[in-house]
Length: 316
Image (cartoon, rainbow, N blue to C red; front, side):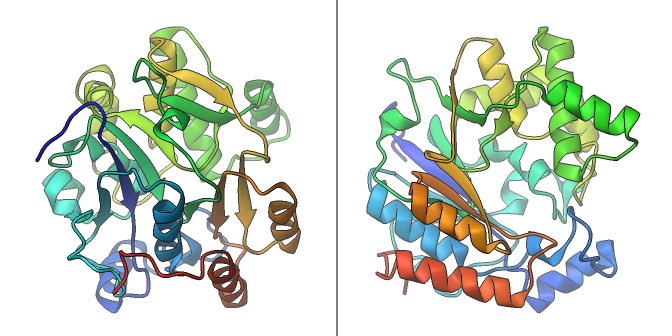
């Protein structure tokens, strides 16, 4: 497979949480899913066809993408045309070590994306609920020198605020915040810089060789310590580590975003839909969670269908 410096792939993590075989395998580890759990609620695994609409957005707004790589656990979207030459399905068994299988932890899967056979040196990482809302170019993700553009949400007092919450108010952080906090402290310990920016929770840019160096050299021991975390854990190293290290080494360009460029639409909050229509951001995420129910998911699917009504070449 030809792979030159101008190629850019996009990698999706996708799961069909409605698949009975997959649910049986997951339930053997989790037992009953608690809807109040931010780490293991149904919203973490529910398939609302977001990937279909995300691919429609890629076709419409980033047709220059070379390959669309979908990382799955022995699954394939029922609507996907796998004969399309741009589509590749990569199973967990192709990239994860045997001791990490089965894996229901996206943080762990993201540690091994650099192992994808033939992955372009420059690649984008996306979740199935992240979408584009306007035209983007390679220059929106990489500098002229080829370094990633790291988009983050500014949180200048995050370290102090989280310390106050946990140590003074005695209110524990949620799983996501704990992982970010742990990862930021880890990078500060190794590189002397504490990065306060939060991931913008959308499509991010990486260099495959940098990810490999982080996973196999710079944070090798920390990643190895996570390899048995089949489910999300507060001790996980979040993929923001790749970006923080790139920034610490001056191999990336930091760009803080506002809701006019990137925003999260929490599908259980009607005001977020209105906010989206007001700002029309370039990037948006249709965020499912422990607070969403089946009606919220139906509303989200209808919303996406209205924005992206035309089938893409990636559908049967």
